[in-house]
Image 1 (cartoon, rainbow, N blue to C red):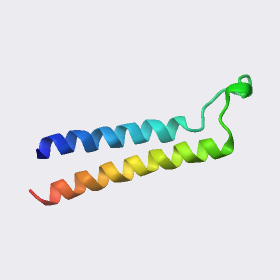
Image 2 (image 1 turned 90 degrees about the vertical axis):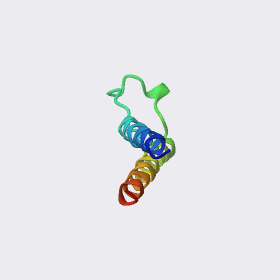
Image 3 (image 1 turned 180 degrees about the horizontal axis):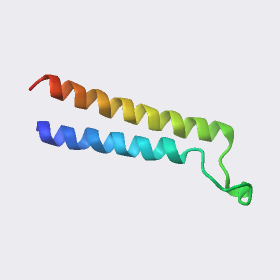
Image 4 (image 1 turned 60 degrees about the vertical axis):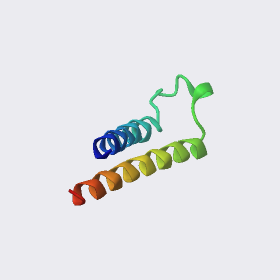
Length: 66
């Protein structure tokens, strides 16, 4: 069970990093009709940060129980 939780927590951290990094996007102004609004960018970045923090907290809690 502990290994399963560690895998899920690791995936949360990984998805959170990808989500937070991709929130800003990079279109150099050529694709502004498809760009996120400022609110959407902040929302995706915050959700990614929450995923990272939650995954890290689970990993730290599982490490201290061993």
